[in-house]
Length: 219
Picture (cartoon, rainbow, N blue to C red):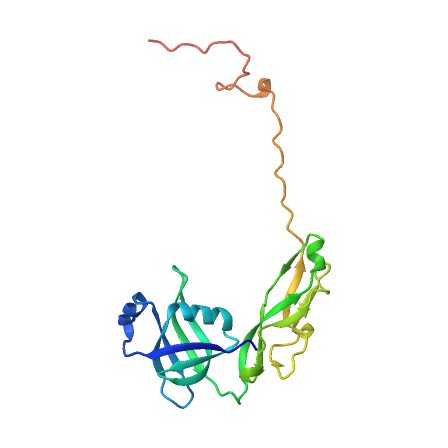
């Protein structure tokens, strides 16, 4: 687990469309959910939130302080404005430090990839894996060696991930994480055959070299 990630939030009364005013002031509306308790509406300063999310993602705990009360949370849902690529709303879920939690952890391929050196490329159908562990034991990344990625068709799966103490991997062992593919060949368009001008019919249907005139219409 990385160093403790902390955020300070303030309770908010504003809800609905009025939260636009919060965003204009540099805050992001958020909600804290805790099992068996009422949810808490809060606001979080935009820049600290984006930094915390960049570090924690949805796989690391965040210590959220709300009105001087510390709550251990996980970021579970982030609403992004697709046009502006900015955060619009965040859902925090309170967790217990002594209870295991489930989280999506990014997978890092370690070492040079032999297939890439040969001019092939790697496709990553899955780059995160679901695990279960105590919040303090959640790893920042899961590592898997690149040595199996040699020829087209070679792949690595969840079963190839290096074991991490106190972490249970919940994803199916056969889930493919990366596979080798060959670059697609670009088919060249066939060259147009050169045509001799003498072989091209004239606009009148005869040979281009025909000097005969068409009969004139009566005036």
